[in-house]
Length: 276
Ligand code: SF4
Image (cartoon, rainbow, N blue to C red; front, side, top):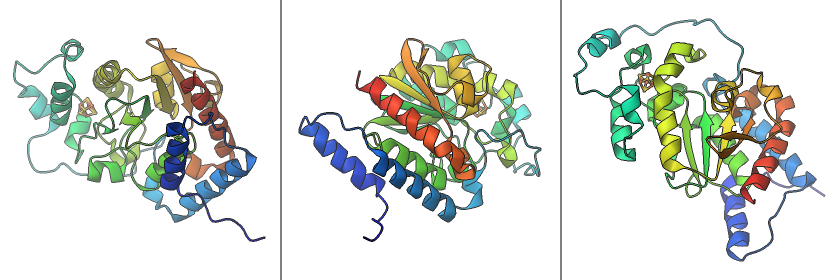
């Protein structure tokens, strides 16, 4: 018998949605599908450009090259020129969704404002059951203004579809940092501190049933634990009373196929949490 063609994530999500609408019992995908999942990860990794595989759970890297300043005032100059009405972090805790987003789109609270092309606020449904929190925009995200595009985005879509979720209707996606660190270096502590009030308010406004943190930075920030990702995954945490599962970042899976199987297990744990 010939090999079956790889699963299409959109088609899989549609079929699983049909089952849910028909009130079919929860479907936990078996070993064959896990094998297909792993094969599809390999396929996406082989097809994806290298820039999709940067960032997220990588060991700290030196910045190879920092883009030169673009025309216009520097972030420091813009920060100095900030109007007295620009809110402090505490004020963001009161903002409604649209106001929060508007403030993020013009934010200059850290140096990343100087080198970004886009502020990457979110994608998906703000009334979602699940929020996925990643690390920071990469090159594709900085170009498009959307989180998780390119090969890592395809892989995230596959991960979500394998547990009957899709960014179109049931998932909201955002990052710890809204602007791309130059050269896709790791986020710095001061940048996380400056940006995390946005994330905190996003999560308070969306108030999902569950959270999935992908990658070390999101996992450590949301769990409040300074441990390697491998020692945080595999259990259900809580963030502000919301169940939280952590797993590897899709970009990291593209670099290390040994993490695909544990990621599968984490997704099944997430599905169990969401099924109550
Ligand atoms: S990373 Fe966050 S804090 Fe820094 S400029 Fe962008 S939106 Fe503002």
